[in-house]
Amino acid sequence: MAGEGKALTLKGIAASPGIAGGPVYRLEAQELQFPTHQVPPEGIPEEIAAFHRALEETGEQLETIKEQVAREVGEDKAAIFGAHQLVLQDPALVDEVENRIRQGTNGAQAIAAVVSELEEMLAQLEDEYLRERAADIRDVGNRILRNFLGVAGPSLTDFAEPVVVFARDLTPSETAQLRPDRVLAFATVTGGRTSHAAIMARSLEIPAVVGLGEELVAGLSRAREAIVDGTRGEVILDPTPADWAEYRKRKEEYQEYARRLVSLRELPAQTPDGHRVELFANIGSPADLPGVEKVNAEGIGLFRTEFLYMDRTSLPTEEEQFQAYREVVEKLAPRPVVIRTLDIGGDKELPYLGLDQEVNPFLGWRAIRYCLDRPDVFKVQLAAILRASAYGKIRLMFPMVVSVEEVRRARALLAEVKAELEDRGEAYDHQLQVGIMIETPGAALTADILAREVDFFSIGTNDLVQYTLAVDRVNERVSQLFETFHPGVLRLIKGVIDAGHAAGIPVAMCGEMAGEVRATPLLLGLGLDEFSMSASSLPRVKQVIRSLSRRDARQMANHALGLNTAGEIKAYMERCLENLNLEQSG
Image (cartoon, rainbow, N blue to C red):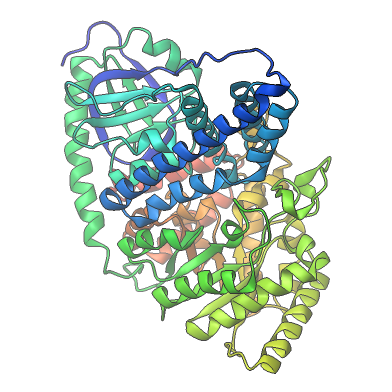
């Protein structure tokens, strides 16, 4: 397997850990050719009927994929394709395609145009999880279009030998075809850690690197072999003999590292000098629970409730919400579940909510602001959460709070709902704890005041960084300025933790920073009580905590806070991890 000439090393996003190498297989984008003619009035009914046949065929195919994934990977990952099936009923897709056909546009053109518009709308959202759903729309839309045209999709199963797959992007249904015995690893030009391709890769334990950019396209023109390091986020095209030797060494180290992480499952997140913190997991729906159990998380630190409102044409009922919350709470009991109330509005547009387009949606009508203005929507959710609290330990959390007035108004509505439930004879936890997310500089700087109103804080670093640094993460021109380790961000985090502790309340973190191992010593040293993250990140964070005394963590944090730039802080934290001899901690 010796490469010839000079190797090309590319850096991307580490999407699924592990390291693998082998022959390159390029998955070329399928260029669909479709007609451009207008449909005459007499042909419109048949064109609409053909569209509905394509929808039906797509639904059957998705059901087959869903059943296969449920058998081979798990029910939680199969839920991806349940969400895809709901897209087939979405009026934003179905009604709009029909409208365009009635105006004379042929079915193929109508499908392609509507899917493209929906994909573009989702791609502009601030929330990374929702932004990655643009790939889902594209996946379903392309499947509908192929079925409409009678064109078969690409195959990722017919390989003569195990390969490393390269693509501009991998859709969820393409990723569902991957088999670890045939696909050694994959790498893509676009994508992020929360894309369904990345999620599926982690479940299948296939190393993956995404977001490599256009440089990958140029490099692939000549590459015959490649090494993909999904732990470091690194791809080597046409490796040299020295690269292959290093690859074999790193692969052995990773396998040993993975065995050590598994051995930590039953052990607490406790430092060698006896300081204990809690490691919780973030989830987006009940389908994520198997991953939580796999790593033995101590609870759910962020239950995003938006999934109940997505991929539908009307608001979820109280009963629908209650059943979803109860399912999670009962399965986790007696472990706690922190449920975040609806964080939607502004940039997260749902057609049936009637939200207006806003010039600055990130600064607009969203989260707690929307809920306080729509008590008819908010109180239904609060009632469902309260009812579910009778079946386990729930903590209620309000997002995007910036003032004491908002906390008091939200609590007043909560009190109204409690009284209404009592009138109905419904049980709920009368000791239910209420907390808020700290996501803006205003909330962080008044944390001492807000702490008197609530039972706990949870720091949402994704938004806190965005608002502190005035950086739109979606805007490619400035996204490189989005820096979690910026000294200003770290000072705000320290202030929030100190204010919470001074008031006697615990402080958690549920943003991406909580699962970033370079930040673990720093956050531990600052006194963070609870880390909540993607379940897949939890074992690595636990390993760092169990390898570092609290005294040393405090010294590291103090030193980091004295540095001048994010680059200096990250370099220092990386050196700290290297000194712990955690070979795969990056």
